[in-house]
Length: 123
Image (cartoon, rainbow, N blue to C red; front, side, top):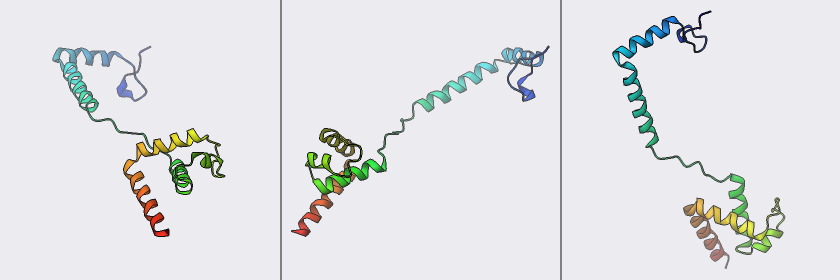
């Protein structure tokens, strides 16, 4: 029983026609050309900068903003807040705030500036 060739569209296999085609290509050194072009394409793709996939969830951002807006730097009060659904400890909340600062430094700075501006308007 002969295996199906890839040209049949029924999967990969090597029939008599395909092996004859490969022998012909080897004589003409086309396989080498295809491999060289594939490796150069792969090298070009590998040299591209890696995309950062690290982002924070919208819930975490809103959580951090709410806690800082209402409690400032009082982490114990944040831990007792009713919005602390996951019952984070003061240290865990502090770490979440620091992660937010590290991921979005420009956004954090504008947030802090707006808090200070609102605080000055109230006084």
